[in-house]
Amino acid sequence: MPNVEVFQESDLSVDDVFLFESDHVVIATGAVWRADGFGRNNPQPLTTLSPGARILTPDDVMAGHLPDGPTVIFDDDSFYMGGVIAERICCEKLPVTVVTPEHMVSDWCYYTSEQYQVEKRLLELGIEIKTTHNLLAYDGQKVTIGCIHTGRQETIQADALIMVTARQPRDALYQDLRRREEGGTQTSFRSLQRIGDCDAPAIIAASVYAGHRYAREFDSEPVDLSVKFE
Image (cartoon, rainbow, N blue to C red; front, side, top):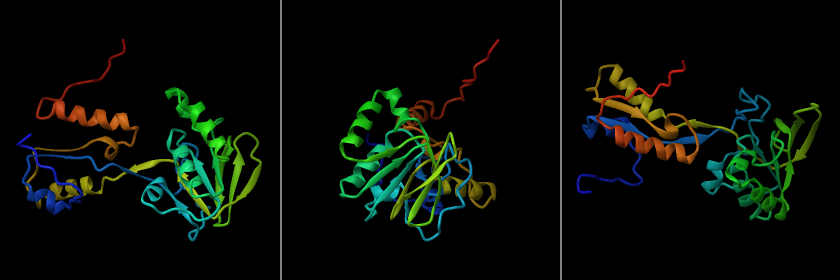
């Protein structure tokens, strides 16, 4: 399309955005994985993680920052990512243990008809799977986990802990733009929105939907999608 310009690999600052002098701005900067243990089974960040411990996230692994010794993966996400990261680390010929509070690994993959294949693959690779256990602590040498039913604790020796728990929006640019607008130091946009994972981290399909929805509803009157129950 001749009226579309694409700037690849270009991080934008607040000043950069205002230089475009656009009427409408939509921010879709995604999300990052948390490294503090916060997730479905730990509603608060864990305070029992040693500051000097090697704690990684899927973002670190995908950026090439890999462990170099026995590794525990704490999977509180329970979709495909935990299994993917486990296989990637196993390819480095490192001992890998996947710990999940659920009753089977990659539990949510049951709904996409993938769970059986994921577990089969992990077992074939020799990856140890520890179900129904929550993460309690990590001191840099051993991971402490506890049974969700009995509370019994045990430790696993590990040089690194990879957190596959929850993600948080990368919304700093959006928040800075809002503050600049509200402070009255810049001309306001006709609209400023955030979509996809920047608004609420979810599955890939949800982000694709958010992009399509924004494009289809662009510059149109808001549609009331509320459902009335009578």
